Image (tube, rainbow, N blue to C red; front, side):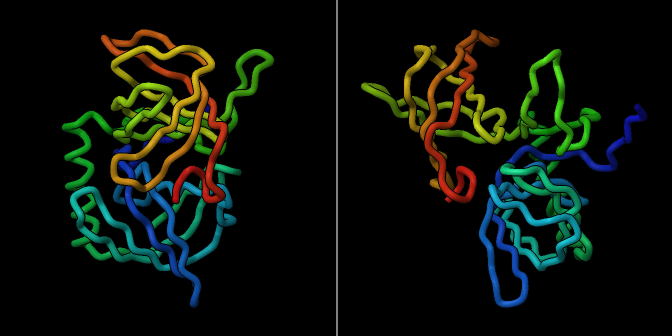
Length: 212
């Protein structure tokens, strides 16, 4: 299989997104931002080929106004968006956001397979996982601590935490910027670079993926 070299580096940050089609406005969250487009997270993705105008708020609070179209759909997770018209000043804002993400290590520079491609490992089918970087608060029975979401899928998420948690423990995950929250159950807990990586299964999610 021939791998395609990506033109742009993707920033694994979360951004507020408003999409407009006619008189309808849909509010979502975007990640994997680059100068060519982004991934919109949604449990009800648009079909490939849909066109819309959009407003995207970057972590720097810079607001991007552009036109875009959906180019790939990932059931229950989201859809890829390609900018069809965007001003050079807005593209520059995104370039700056990506450079900031590079300094923080929140980027994807690898040649990953298409986002909608399911990976087979032996007889086990692995869900597509979207890598993001998001600071969260973890709340459980008798504790509150900070963590960092590393990736998400249709039914699960991976979180880095400073302390281990018990298998089967139920934890509420809350974005520090109050953009989303979810209830999840710890399925595995392994040490990683001085922290603990919690593999968690989502047990309670909102209609629009895990985002408000």
